Length: 306
Image (cartoon, rainbow, N blue to C red; front, side, top):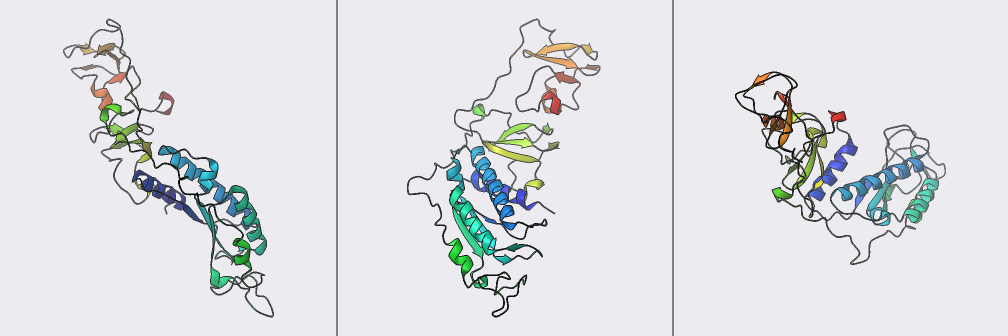
C-alpha cells in the first residue's frame, strides 16, 4: 500500500513543477493510524511536520519563504469529538488548545468535520464515544466547537505580499549543472541528471526510465525530483590532466588490469585486460566498460555511496 505522506508530497511536487500558484495545503488531522491518548499533541506534531515539508518543497523550486509565510499556507481540519478510530476523541479542551497553537504560529486556516456534528449526543444524558454523523460523541454545548474555533481569524496575506512564483526553469543544455538524461545510459542510486530543465536524482539503478514520466505515486518512479535548473546555474567542467600524465590510449594496444591511460585529457584505469574498448564508454556503461574513470563525473554519487 502506498504511503499517503509520500503521495501528498508527490502531488505538491507536480503542482509546483507545473508552476501552479499553490495558495495553501489543508491537512486532515484526524483518524490517526497509531493509538493516541493526546489528540491535540498529535494534531500539532502533524501540522508542524507538514509545515516543514511544505517549506522544503518550495525551497526546492527556488522560493524561500519566512516561517510565517509558510504557516500562512497551512490549514488544519479536525474531526470534532469521536473520530472514526476507537479511543480517539478530539475534545472541547483540545479545540481550545488548537486555537492557542494556531494563534501562536499564525496558522492560515482551521476547519472541522463537521458543522452538523457540533452538538452533544444525547440530551438529558450525554452519550460519549458515539461515532455518529449528527452529533460529536463528546461532552459539549451546542455549537461549542464552532464558537471556539471561530476565534482564529486566519492569516490570509495582504494584497501584494504573496511570494514571487517559482522562476521558469533554465532549459538551455549548456547551463545544466549535471549530465543530460539519456535513455541509453544506466544510472545507479544517487546519480543526478537534468531533464527538460529539471534536476532529478536516481533512487535505484535504472536504464531507460524517463525522469519526466508522469506517475500517480512517487514510489512508481526510480527518480526523485530535486527542483528546476535555476537562472545562473552553469555546466561544471572536469579538470583535464597535463599532457604526458599517462600514455595516450590506443585502440590497437592490449591493456592489462591496473594500467592507466589518457583520452581527451582525462585519465582512466583498466579494470581488466582489454583491447580496442574505448575508455569513453565508461561514462555510459560504467558496469560493462573495462575502464574506470580517474575523475569525478558531475552528478554521480560519491565513492562512499557507490
